[in-house]
Each structure stands twice: as C-alpha cells, then as structure tokens.
Length: 113
Length: 115
Image (cartoon, rainbow over all chains, first blue to last red; front, side):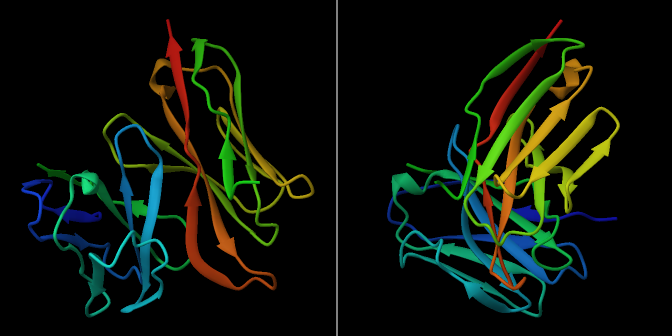
C-alpha cells in the first residue's frame, strides 16, 4: 500500500521567504509527527497530531514555525521568514495510534540561502 | 541523565562479528521502546519493537532492563548490509500509562561492517 509521502522532496529558498511543507500520512493513521534532522545530527521532534489536534507543540523552535492538520489526514508545516539555520531535512511520520511504530516519509530537504 | 542516550560509536566490525549497542533513558514511566535503522540520506525505518523484557528477530535481539533503564540491541553474524545508523527511540509516557505521544530519538550509533 501507499506509504507516507512528502512534498516537495527538495526546496531551495532565500532567507526571509516563507515555505510550506506537506505531508500525506498513511490512510487511517490517526497520529502524525514532524521532525527535522540537520546534517549529521539526530532527529529533533517538532510537533505531533492526534487527529487534527496538536497536544504537544513544545518542539517547535520558534513562533516562525506552525503546523496544521485538516480532516485527520494531510498536514502542512509552515516556516515563516526562513533563516539559514532552518536548513535541514524535515521528516514526517504517521502511526496507527500513539505512541507506536512510526512510518516515515522520505523527507523534504530544505536549503535556505 | 539525558532523555535518551546512546553509545556514540562509530562501530567498525568485520563481517560475521557480533556487535551490541546500548541505550539509556531517563523516563521510568516509558513502557515500550523501539530500535530504528537509518541508512545514509534515507528516512528511519523500524527495526524492532520492545514491549517486555526482550524481543528476538533472526540475527537481531533487543533486550530491556527496566530497573537500570537501558535497552540493548545485539546483532549476530553481521552483514555488510547491516551498515547503518541505529536509533534508539523512547516514548515519553507518564506514570499510569498515559501516553503523550511524543517520542524521543537518540542521536544514533553508526555501524560499519567491512569485508
């Protein structure tokens, strides 16, 4: 069956621009997670959704980061006024329920020039 | 103690060797644990889940020691294809089994298996 998909796969943007990253979870998975991974680093938790609700937003690095999920399915992660330190791979994962095995998408590689 | 801490590695072993990784965690309420593997420039993929004292799957054995709050992963008869980064993952459960949904990933241990 279809796995988690993310788009775009690569995004190059200029400092100060806004970007929107999209995640399509596996159908029926109620939990959805966003992480980011900088080069050579571990995964940094950003936010997770249970349905359309985000019980834990503690990982968002700053108020420039926001995320939403609609219809219990697609999620978007928005970064406003991007900075160079935002450059990383942004990974999305979904799970049938929390906190169980997660299935990751291929990630979006964001480069801020 | 960090939320999740792993052997820093890297581990370089010959084919056929047995190698073990350790992971310690700070949240004594965590109930289930996971090992993921991540290949270079790829997304993490689930390797094993650990819900009780341990789990075995072919050449891979995961063990859990709740008293000492550590999890281990043992790989026997290493293959070249086992070369990857191994991530220890701990859910941040609360006492009483309440799940907050947040998972904390360790920094990962790099394994390189050479001929």
